[in-house]
Structures are given as C-alpha cells and as structure tokens.
Length: 522
Picture (cartoon, rainbow, N blue to C red):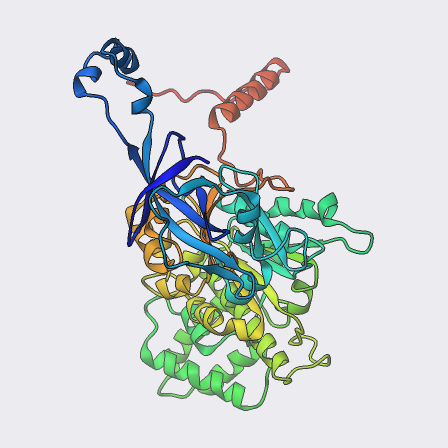
C-alpha cells in the first residue's frame, strides 16, 4: 500500500502518499475484489514549509522545522491526482471504466505485473507479438500486436537525438523474428539502417528452420522503368518552370497515343518517336523545346527495362533496405511514388484475383510492411510531393489489401495531418517544439492531455505508445537493440579532430609532407 484516497471528482481522484511517484506511473485500487488500473497525473506537497524556514539557504529546512518543534515528516507527504483506466475485460479485450470513483479512505497500491500484463494485447514470443520495451519504472514488458501494427499503420515521431531510428530498428527486429517473419521494406533517405544487416546472424532471430534475410539496394541500383511513370510524373521531371501549356498539351498527346496503342511497356526512344510524330510547320519550336527537356529522362535513375522488382523486395522473412541517400529529394519522392503505386496495384490486383502466379511482376500474395523515413518529405503538410497522393491512398485504403506503413518523422508539424491521423498506433518520443506538440495532440486521440504534456521531458529511449496495438497509452522504455546503431548516432567531433591530427602527425614523422597552413594577412 502506498497511499489513501482523499477525494474524487469527474476527472478522477486524489490520494495522499509519502512515496515519490513519477507522472504516468500506474497504480491501482481494489473494488469488489477486482483491481482497477489508474495512472498518476499530477503531484504537489500536501503541506509546505513556512517561507521563513526557506530564506536562509545555508540552513536545511528540516533543521529549522525541528528547532521549532515541528514534525519534519508532516512535510514529506504529497497529494497526487490520478485518472482511472479501469479493469481488463478479457471477453471484450479492453479496459472497462467502472464509472465509479474510489471512496474516501480507499487504499492505493502500486500496480503489479498481474495488472500491468493486461496493458499488452498479446504475450511475449507468441505469434504476432513485438516486444518493444518495458513499462517505465518497472520491468513489465510491453508487447505490441503486429496484426494491428500492419493492418492499421504506425507512426514513430521524435525530435532529433531522441532515439527515433533506434526505435524503428527495434520494431524491425521484432517483425523479422520467427513469430512474425514479416516482409519489410525500409525506404532510407539517409543510409541510416545499414546496421540492420546484422540481424541475419542474431541468435534471438534464428531457429533451426528460419533465418531472416537482408537485402540492401544501393542508390546506383535503384531504377525506375519509364513506362511506370504517369504523364504527370514526366511533366514534373521535365518542367523547370518554363514549360508552356502548349508543350504540356503536345506531350500529353504523345504519351496517350503511345498508351492507346496498347503498349503497356515502352522505351524512351519510342516515346521520343511519338513526340517527333507530332512535329509540323506550326509547332516546330515547341517540339524542339519538348525534346530538349526530354533529355532529363536519360539520367541514370531511369531505365527502359529495369524497374523496382516487388517480388524480390518483398519476401517472407526478408528486410529490404532501399538506400536512396545521395539521390536528390525530388527523385526520392518519385522513386517512393512509383514503388508505392506499383505495390498498391499488386496487392489490390492479387486480392481481387486479377493477378496470379503468371504475373511475375505484379503477384504479391501476402501482406507487407513499409517504413518511410523522413515521412514529412513524402507527405508534406503544405505544398505537394510526387509521393503524397499515393501515400495517402495507401494509408486510407491499404488496410483492405494488407499494406502496412510506418511513418517516421522528426517534424510532425510539417507532416500531412490526414496522413498522420491514419496511423492508428503511435510511438511518440521527446518532442520540444510547441507546434509539433500541438500537431501530436490533434492527431493522437487515444493519448490523454497529461501524457502529451510529458513529451518535452521524456529521456532518450523513452516513448509514449498509444493506439490500437496496445490496450492503454503507456510510457515505455525502449528495449536494447540486438543490432548496432552506429549510423544513427551523432558524430563525436572532438574525438574525430584528435584522431585526424594524430594521423597527420604520424605521416609527418614518416616523411609525408603535410599541407601547408594558409597564410592569412592581417
């Protein structure tokens, strides 16, 4: 027992305790033999020292109090406010609020594992489970439902340095464990996830009959087949702001003429030929302008035949890391758009029996999971991105066809609000920016205001997890990763400077002439 109820109201109840309890900690009381789970919201001293006792910083307030004959223990009690979560109904699979508050004098105790285990929707190691961490302040594991994660999407939001990429790594590790064997693709704009390749040799992920696979696709190997582009994609690539309406109209005609010839796949030269076929004495300069801009499509990223091979990228028990670092942002958006568009078509067509085993490039007979890093780039709050439309379509309709998306961002205020609200499970880490906090509060309906207020004070590796994959919002300490996290860490500049200086001195001693210092006149 840690305290006693003193009063209650519509917001919950207050209790008195001499224990120091952090905000968000779980407590409980017993009602008719049933333990009712509650959460600590706020604390303040029950009785304060007189101001006069605090004026001399050299004298401890306890000593002053004892000098005047006061019991120092009277000043060690706190009044806590708490909210009621309820009791877990196994038939309903959720917590039920008892609709009554505890009576005055009711004893309060710390919530034990027998109660806290019901926060998780499934058991550790069972089919479709993901051990993400432990409840803050204890060692009770928090296990998310992979079924809900994949079918209803998830967001991972955090400020820089709060552990966002680390947490995504933990989630991916869980998805690749033997109880899940998920096909996962990480769209990696910064090349941060290469260390996840170690998962193929991690003992916790291997059984006699299963070993996860990792496929890393380097930037130079990422190709877009020109026939996979929409006419709007072509124009967005070609238009530098000077492409006239007449140019766009003629290009659309050439594109649709080629498509109407029932040629599902075409080359750049074939499309160029269609543009040439529209040439006459009245549009000579316009055609030349189109062809000059058409030259952009001969960049290395575009190919007449190679494309994003869905069947190779999405395999059971395989992690595919699409490393698009070094590729300019507009092309990253285009790659994401083409990949997601083809993925949605493949899953929708397979589910509706339009595609079967004979459609090698389009048949995908199982659900998949896609991690989108820097999601605010691909679905921005303001402005447009080539990938925004298809990403919103997948977030709103993808659950019907088994496409799960993990949106990862450090700036939720720059992320499309509709897209973020479609992520029904939220892993939210430290957020300091007020605009970002406001966006989180508007998008995450399941998290209470008192938990949202904790976002700025969360330590690295701590997160508020809420939504459909867990039974009640919880502050969680993310577990230790199995794989390393070298790429996601900040650079230790002083250590690197020292190492470079030692390297230079070593070569100077070996007779290698160092670069001369620049002579700057004053």
